[in-house]
Image 1 (tube, rainbow, N blue to C red):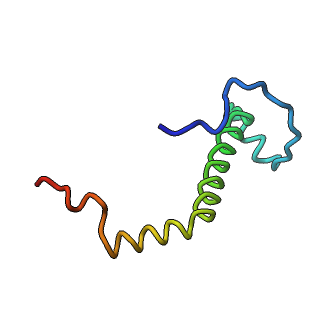
Image 2 (image 1 turned 90 degrees about the horizontal axis):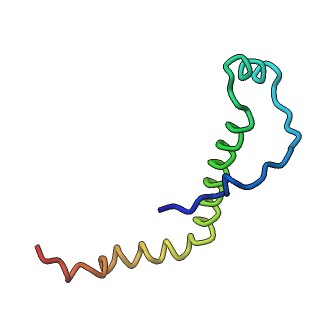
Length: 82
């Protein structure tokens, strides 16, 4: 189970955001909740950035682990029952 990136029950904070006026008009016409959609998309962007940062910070360890698996196989190779 993945840990949520943010508390959906946390209080909202006003934020000044500038977006294209044509896009805003279309969203309004379609009754799109811009704040909610922005929050959902921003959560996805934050998650992706965190994944990327983690991968970069752990790149060396991942490469060493993958080289060991290539060379020696996984630890469980000798434990297979069938």
